[in-house]
Image (tube, rainbow, N blue to C red; front, top):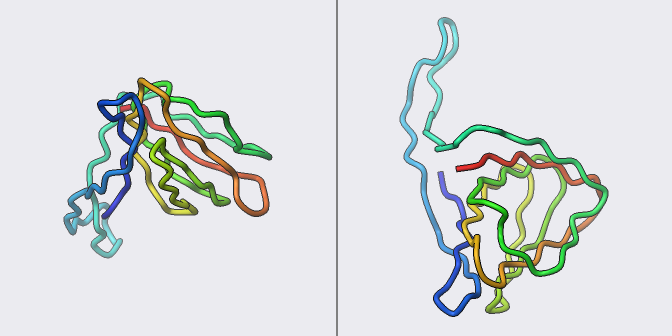
Amino acid sequence: MRFVRIVGTEDGGSAFEEGEIALAERHVAEGVPPMAVGGLPSAGGVSFLRSAQFDSAPHPAPREQWVVMLRGTIEVEVSGGDRRRFGPGDMVLAADTEGRGHVTTGVGTPPFEALFLPV
């Protein structure tokens, strides 16, 4: 499963990197067909977020964390000007915990919902 990681750069900015989580077919419960399962490292403290707006000033991630979009679409702009959109089912690993960070903007109809999983 592919995901995007937002990383800090040497010049104090941010950038996108591509990543992948290995999935393996497993039986997770009796009577359930095999499913693709992969590990998602987390330090605990999962948070659910719902917001009518997701617009931000430039900011670094408060901690390295997974952002799993559940509802709505956001656009993230890194310091080099690159932009990407993420919607339901997309996973982003926000790892730019220092420097200028990134800008997040809600796109389309709110609410925006996401899970935040600290690494």
